Length: 212
Image (spheres, rainbow, N blue to C red):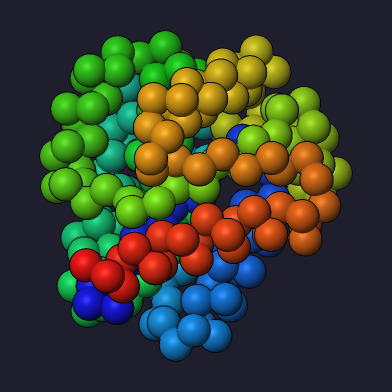
């Protein structure tokens, strides 16, 4: 590959992102790609510290504008310290959540102005958009039930179900508006059935990137 590939993975909590990220990473490594797996918020020392504040269930009083600025600060640090250097070094980056999460959770979930979110995002990412985004489509009721069965919820997971429904609707709208980049995967099926669809889409974009 002549340049690094930037992959992001999206979906509501409990949709199976972590399992599929491992499969994507293993598959790419088997093809000889150098793979960097990261997450948002997080991925750097500074961003992980911000993550701990954002997700701490004790901070129930956090204002939505504070939240959006913290997310954006963490994203800016991740882009500059991890994503940009890796892509420039012809490495493949897989990021667990990115700008689509921001729009789904802060825009549709919190009801913040989307134009404002896009302006802030343009500063934070400096044109570093993904080559392909996998949206694991799973209704929030099922996803949260899966998630709560395995761990205590963080501050975002503990939001009311209506909030998670708005987020899910936001993801669906984003996927509809960006069909060339965002690939919707039915995440209600078995791990292997989901992976079969992911691999087909992944191999397609790998072939395209190798040609440019």
